[in-house]
Image (cartoon, rainbow, N blue to C red):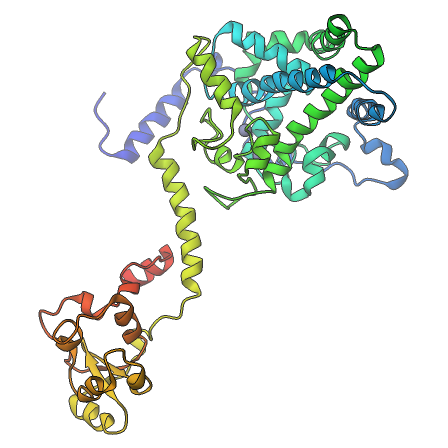
Length: 461
Ligand SMILES: [Zn+2]
Ligand SMILES: [Zn+2]
């Protein structure tokens, strides 16, 4: 095959190959990229107050009411041993890794490879978190990333904090969520094994095991086991995960991009096993880390890292530092540009009148005008404030003081140069001396200036 002449023909060649290939062997993508997403995003009928229960997700509500009722109201009436409470929190933490390191970073984003034993381990832990199976969870989450903050986002933050936290589980989504490719998960034996056995796994890992351990090991009461080790723990871990969809889209900094709602915050990271650097995550979802600075809290990253050291994981994906810093610095430049906008700058050169030498001399009779680097400056109001004394300034009125200003008499500071530029009132025709560096004409504060691309294009054109 002859080499492509250019990029366009190369692309055409590739398209020709793909159009002529046999598609009978191509796997069917069931939830994958329709031609127009909008055609699938059909609104459900408008809710009617009298039929409000039709819009309630009854199975979700049953689980949430039961866990919240027993887990949050139970402690008012029932106490437990401190060991049981410690166990409940530790067990929730362990199961949480099934969600963060498993459901999220492994299966949703494929940010690292896990050995088969680790996959099964995470799948079992994830089932114990009672957040549906891997395929369902990742389906929602991939749509969330693909359609962040739009109507197709299953838990879009613009619909309100509580909607993105728990409302999307209580109410039937009025709009079909956006499509996402989950063909890899449909063909993943561990994911499908967990899906087939989800109820049994959840029953054992979320109820039987945590209910038995306190009962058998330190004689906790049955009611103590149910309230603290089961209901409270499920409830707690639910809200840990829910916080990634709500708190992480509401609290903190847009460190890498402010186009959408994801934010970075230590508190969210603390609550969510390290998922709180969500602005970074939405920009670099293929990175196995959420926190990239040494002082940031991301136990899920450490968990994956330890698994790698133990030989259970490999190919931990890390985005190029150059690209990460590019995004970070862009935001910092944006912030500086906003601050720069609050500064009053010298009158633009194009708005200054051009005077010849005679006109300059005439005007100098009435005002204290001096020339520096081809610009005419009115220093009348500054004569008594000049740190070097008024006499030297008065002696330069009506003169070209360029050499004196730049070292002839005194080498002025950058701040003095900036201040001088604020006193520009005109340009002397032919007054810029050949050989004088442009740095003499441009004050230090304006030599490096942050500009939007539109401004640059405007200047170029
Ligand atoms: Zn998010
Ligand atoms: Zn994600």
